[in-house]
Length: 261
Ligand SMILES: O=P(O)(O)OC[C@@H](O)[C@@H](O)c1c[nH]c2ccccc12
Image 1 (tube, rainbow, N blue to C red):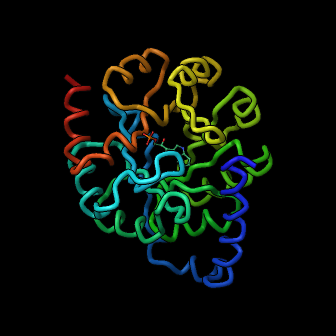
Image 2: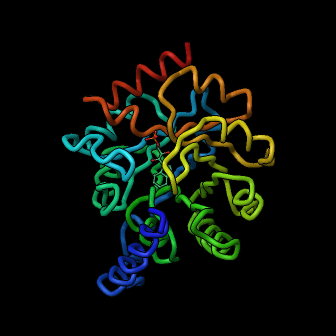
């Protein structure tokens, strides 16, 4: 069994337990449920650099990235650096994240926040909204076309942006629909962890222009971004490259300064 299958099996159990602890109607009473969301897609369109910076403590491929940072400092640093949005890993078991990380990021910044999670149930989208999210991630590799439709339409009804992630042509063809805002190409194969920026280049021409194109994972240089921009990419999701440093905000600020100069 590959790691993605394992993650999804664990996630289904986790979500069933969550539902039994906090029922949907209670989530809908969250103060944040009424909050006006900010659009990451709009920020990317209006930006020269298009950086989406991630909070990631560890991952199944890298184990430890950074365990000593606090989310408040990271969120404030990213905002000060001028990123377009922040991605917050909320999976606990494999990535060391939590919904509390999302709350702290929300309380510390006005950035559009992406809930980085393995979404397999409507419940997680309501939960995302209740915890202050602006954008949800849907991963084509673990969803059917019908699920992508159902989840993205629910998200749109809550004024959330939708980033749909693909890794190959089949996933892309399966997923194209009007309820998506951004199409993300993951340069990392989530089943094998291999990273190759060519994946973004290859798939770019198959993505219709009405979606904002985002390239995800394995980006560690300004040159990589300059190489991807001619393929139509407006967004670049960067985690480890910032998180492995002592001050991710400063790293992001330097990166953006170099990119825009
Ligand atoms: O740390 P990196 O290589 O810059 O990657 C960030 C982000 O793209 C990656 O964390 C990611 C992309 N898609 C995901 C889906 C689930 C968990 C994590 C991810």
